[in-house]
Amino acid sequence: MRMLDGFNEGWIDFKADRGNRTRGTTPLEQVIEALVRQATASGTA
Image (tube, rainbow, N blue to C red; front, side, top):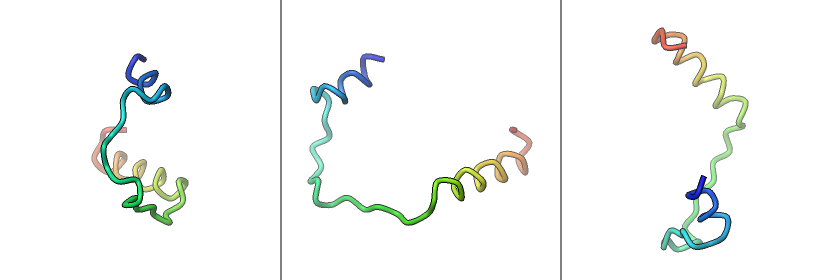
């Protein structure tokens, strides 16, 4: 919980250049479906 507080309060920060972010276009629903399919196939679900 303290780690989350650190990010929210700004005392934990990654020193990466904020201009170098890459955002994908895959919808969250598609990602979750793929993860569930993978977990089901491997027997971990």
